[in-house]
Image (tube, rainbow, N blue to C red; front, side, top):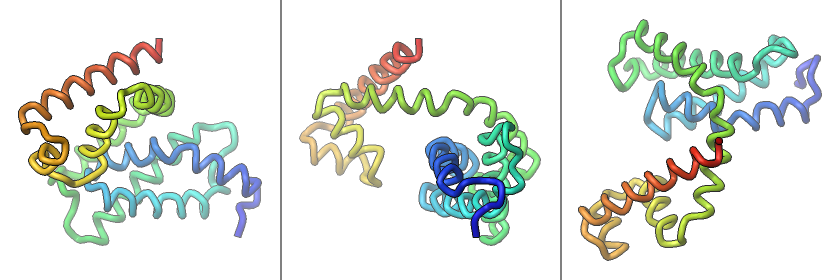
Length: 172
């Protein structure tokens, strides 16, 4: 069923354009990536179903973050274990409320990071992506790239500093 007041294509575009920011926000509240992906999918379903509740011209990102927050709480309730960091509901609400404004420039920073990643030398990009996109321990990655764990930590630190500088330059 399509929302009455929204073109389905525009609704999909609007929801899709906020996926990276929504996932980052959910990961702040629940830092398990697999669970966060599940919460994001549930959030997308609710956003679609409740699109008629969204007021055109208002802040879609803030509204979608609120839905994501409520879906995260619902996830905790279904799992009957609370949040994995052991935070009180009050502290979790405070984190959620204070995080939302900080995410305002997320998409811009995300685009800048993508550009900076593209500028990295191939070996550095491979090391960075292997480290952050897999569950490999550093010891296993160090064997794969032929460097000690200590040397790998230094390489990752250098890459992160270079990316931070690059992103800041992209944003100025």
